[in-house]
Length: 103
Figure 1 (cartoon, rainbow, N blue to C red):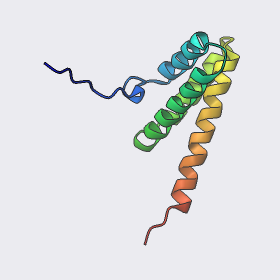
Figure 2: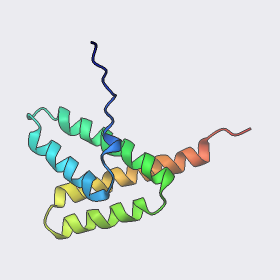
Figure 3: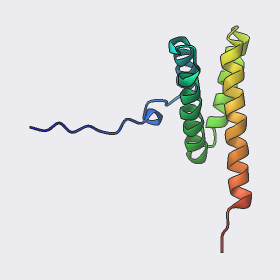
């Protein structure tokens, strides 16, 4: 009997802005020092933010509030990273809207 595996996509499990912050923190703790896991976490979070912004207009505001809460609670690096990823995702979305060819 052969085993069948489903493709794992982290975007299916990162539902809330708090999940994104915890995922970044967890990857930073488990990183072996070469930064490979941190880069992968950044890509995963960026893709998740882009996908969620397209479908949920309030997600960007909720993520901004979560980042501010993290900074207020002393987790400055995680909050700063979330804000940076949100800014990049919003920039990407704006560029896509203005520079997409539509006949």
